[in-house]
Length: 594
Ligand code: ADP
Ligand code: MG
Image (cartoon, rainbow, N blue to C red; front, side, top):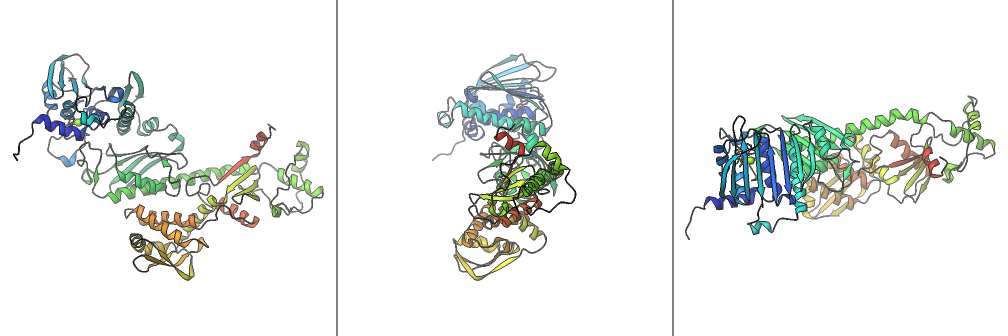
């Protein structure tokens, strides 16, 4: 076996396999070069998803003809003047992209520095294909044609132009978000797809991800231990079926890091259903020595020196922003309430008339049937009662007045509470609502000290896989803080001694198994507070009134009253609404009265 040095041509092809997997990765390298060259405007043209043509033109610093020749050589870069690879602030630094791309396609590189003439160099699959003067404005224009045409092994892995185009679009979007100060255009098969003027980051993100982020987004700006996080995330209610719109930028570099997905899930855990995903663009600034960008040929991954600090900042920062936002919106609802709730005496008027007509004591609540269904008020009559004497008989029926969620009138399908509010009909999903109340109760209890626990008369033994038991054993102290007392009981079982009092009767083996799964998924990187919050949500779900349980009127009213004073009670732990209201106007429309 004889060892030989590989010819440069082959080395470049091997590198191309790592740097340019597909058109989108070549495009990414070219746009990054434009940004590194100080461009203020980058214009991209693609044909057939980049398989036929990728062209990137910029107004950056340009290159002289000597520099152009050098740029096409392997490991030639202008970006590491001092060999300090741990202090890189440019997108590029490896000097591999241009020679790699030129080895697997036909490349025409044209460039012009200010105050000089332009030059053109053509390369055909690594071979010189001529050079000469070129006419172009200052800057650089590079055309890449027939990428991988002569590399069947690679060609096989390419997908349809359509999906290659989607990947190209994503690559441009990422870089356009990273550098909102630069203008971009993107054309595909002769059609203008994007026109982006230089702007501020939030406007750029909204333009690229979803205009709705204006209204349904929450701004992020927090810092800790020398790390700073800014950006925008969507409200839990504004979500998607795919986690495909979550972007992380580290020191302006778009990166794909698994850490982001996990941190997002943790931050939204009890606010959004498991199969729904928020939108996010997060910009992380970290000191250069805290992050290694040289871990991946395409530079799309980074390695943090302290990943749990980053994760903690993301989870904590997002969580706080979401909490503050939900408090703000709750306050908005509250302050709107007096206008909504004090304007009408309709209910009293109805009640008085009912009593006058001999309806007797209103037993509507007990029967669960609306007492005044089908009654209408004449305008005159109403005015009459609006001026009713100050002293009047206290009605036996609970007043709807002053209760935003109204008074329970009945239950439908043992699942929904129907309540009458002053301004309409309220329908509450009893399980969703109760789950949220239990969670908030547990949170409040935890913040105020110990959570009340209920010792089991007979401790329950739960059988689990050994790793699950190990995980639970590691969380004994955390769980105790939530009122769940457990103990290791042999290799494959856990003994449960007490459960949070808020739970009531519950399926203990199911709860313990869910918790084990939860802890496995969260891993060790979360702060204690965040972890407890998430575990509390799982416990709350187990301890809540199920759909299908018949409730007494008193129970229903108690639930409504508690909802009115509990933060975030308008959303269940999975981000769905807990109640809806049909305003009188809506009802009138349903019956064509309006
Ligand atoms: P890297 O970006 O890692 O340095 P590349 O192969 O992408 O490696 O580019 C090699 C060199 O070519 C760069 O360092 C830069 O000096 C020059 N270059 C490439 N593209 C441009 C451009 N659009 N404008 C100006 N200079 C460029
Ligand atoms: Mg580069």
